Image 1 (cartoon, rainbow, N blue to C red):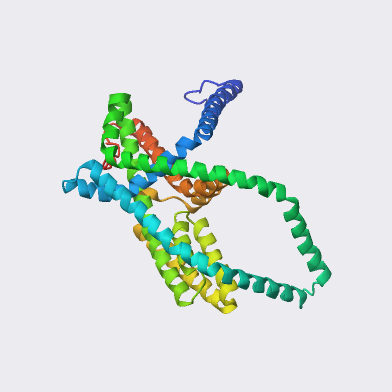
Image 2: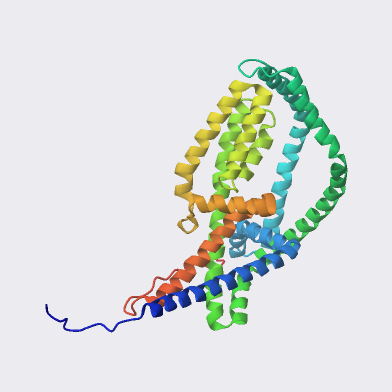
Length: 378
């Protein structure tokens, strides 16, 4: 046997384990510090939610109103006049939609209530027949249990009236704040990033300006694209509901449009509601036809429209979308579900930017790091 030409210096096993444990400890402390920071930020946001929510909604509305406002300012309109016209047109459109659907609800609600009762009786007869053969006593016992539960909750329902009054007042305050904030965001939006750059300094301001410009472009693209996709869904599904003479067709069309802004979950809920009302109002055959229309339209949307229209920068895995919507809905209800996907998109933009900065510091200096620029409110 021959001796090796060069022998490696032996490294003690304890030193290797110690370095690994030290590395794990440092990263654990970093993760704990980040989690603590996020926890504190969550508490602050929860305490200031009455202010944070109008700001978030105003930003979403501003992304929708910015293109027409920009077009008017390029044609010589003063920024205040352009922002005011866009905002008034937007809310006038919303008011018109409400004015159209409310009489439909009032006119058709009594007839729908009667048909709902008939539908419940049909279900009762079906449960009593084969193959279930449930006895009248069992059905009466279940019905009585539901009635007793409602009666026992009378005090809670009465207290909910006062809670509802408070909620309406809060909604009015939020609406007024959103109105004014949207106006100023659209009017003075181009001045914000340069001001932030000056306040934060050259280096930090450069990063903030780049990140916020990309966030703005991503949000604007997502909202406008999702609005177009939701509008196409609502038009085709609503047309089918009108042809089939389904009760509350206009209301269901509007719900379908709004549900499109909550990916996956919103379309599912809106479709299920349309099928249910078709079943109660027109019968089983019409409900099946409505279900077929919804499935066809949503398949075309998911496999054709979304890939063609949705921006690549907004490309999120369906699992991330589903988890974001679930978390947002469980924490903040419908508003949370609506804001969940834009929030996830913003998080993805920030993560991508951090990754670019890391790559720029780790790649070879002979290779230029990838750069990405987005227009800033232009």
